[in-house]
Image (cartoon, rainbow, N blue to C red; front, side, top):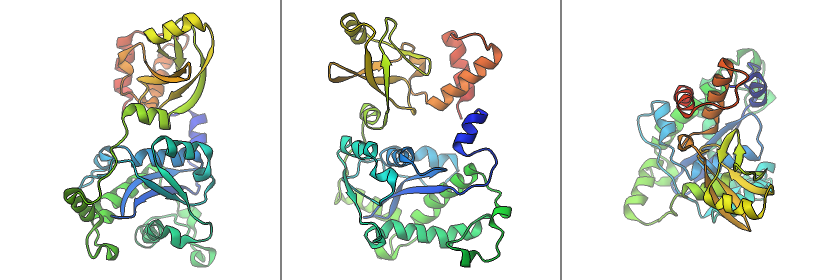
Length: 318
């Protein structure tokens, strides 16, 4: 799906490298609610993990053939984070505020303030990682003469699949001392049934777009706005153009659904749909793969009929 330049940027060019794991846990039930594997722990990885917390995770469990479901699609009230630069970034803090989440920055050098998640990493390092080739251990003394680099043979996709399967089928179903012998999944389901800990509802697609959408700027033209060669237009945007022709505007574009964007007009965010309804519920990576496939057949062509695009999108979707 990716070009050579994109593969290099994502760290998927067959070189061995160290990957990072960003994880979010519900301290009440010990359920893992978000997990992002990244080659570079920057703000986008923290944003993706938070997005996963408030999104339906059933597709991840289904993709790896998990035996049980992966519940938890709610907005947390308080989010405790460590002192990583990505978690202190203004964009991440603003997203938390947009979702009504109180972000609690823990004290550097005090892992006890993050005891629940630190325990998860310890569990992973002692139960899962020893089963994998290429592990680097916690320090040079523990690694001793183990040729970690020479034994590295797992792809990022392999690790992601292993982590999801482990969390959903093993970690969530293992009795926990902190839960008086209940498993995280049992505690989660019991709390939901008893109604003792009501959760804030998951965000609407529009609220997610405003909170997690990539901030961009575009000039409004007569035919609307284009992002990734998808044209967005509406009656509201047309009326605004008559008063402010060829003016630059702020917008929010969410890669997981490019069917609509948010445009700030006269200080108010407005939802502007794609001109073609074929892009509803289409993610950016599928559209990028479809565009590459279309260009390979006709490199000079810039526009295609809707039916042709539809067939290309069906082929490119995972």
